[in-house]
Image (cartoon, rainbow, N blue to C red):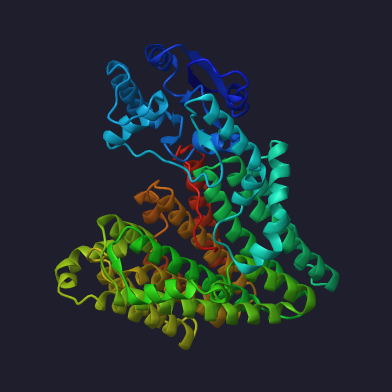
Length: 602
């Protein structure tokens, strides 16, 4: 239970007490500032507390935005201020200062809540002030002003604003025009029945898994059902975020579930299509694995670039300026959002092609579309990086190092290469990573299966990888290193599985890459949630990217080709068990602060 302290008796006809109770607050009335300070001290320290002027007039949703958002320790709107346990000490100090001052303030306000906010600002405390738009939140000074404020409240439909704000501010064309116009109402229906975003996220996952099962039947009715269910799963996927925004039910766990389940749904569907094609005599497992590798590397490019630049200083670029200019022209905004093939467009394409064509055609279209999108976005980001003058922070360098997922081999060699790495020019670091990755993938793809050369190339890859991370990753193009490592590791597994030409090798490789990709996505969302990277012991146990690459190449050379599938399967199960158990333990028990991602559609 949260506690709201009203400063003074509510004005006759005021709905403030009922509005606060509807938001889950226990309302207490303070006769004067000293009484308010006493009541504040009586509220347990692990509870949210709010101080609200009894004369407040405004929309209930303005109060909801100001007083219930779990993402911020302290937040305020005119006439009200709230603090979660993390911001409680700052609120208590500010109130004590205002009470001891006898109500005086350098700012001409007579609302205790507003004076507290002014004191918090003077102390340098970060106070979140939500955008209210046309929503009213005011403390009228006299009956005439109160009457005008009430008329303003009546003139604006706060429920319509609440529904509109439930939709992500930046989304893809398909989502904006074909899903969100009705999914927001599904979100409201869920909110009124007490459903949580995490429950809707789980329902979306179950629906997608059923769709994958339908695709695995290999029949035309199964493919049609799979396409329809995939679209419905995406509707639910949009609904969970809209429900979070509509009811302000944000959490780090929810953001992680939403992102992780999106990948699980998509990659499980790829597997379902491959199984369905196999029933019809067409082996498309290499295409399915290739699509997963390409899509995962695309995401890592997004994550790495954003982490490298989100807090960069002097962040200017002519390319970025041109991009902003293009966004000012209406039609170019939607074209540019569509050609990057975000999740809405991608899933719609997959669903339609599944229902109307064959799995092979579906994968060909997916690979071509994702390859074009990856080329477009990566080229643009490279140009931005080369033309901007920015100083990247230690935090960004640490995030890139965590995303690199270097194991004991790379870290050990890196210590020996520190002096050499310092003398390398900036472009040499990603170039070394690229050359090492290309060498190991090409060797795996172009030499006979079972020979020693892929293992030799993998050992060289471990050396080049260590050289790439031997100094802090603050160079203009150092954000390319994590995606280059992902492409090298996944590409090697794909190449060896194809060269093995034995039943089950490609599905086993698909499982291994899926398990490792889960670990990499998990790392991303820990960093995004300010929860830190996975523990060092986990990275050591599963070998790091270079250790796993070397192990797979050694297995290809050491075991009989008929046993390669078994070896890949055992490795996939082992990696999956370790990363899943640790990941679930962390997200269930971490207590990380609430977050919500409003970035680019994945």
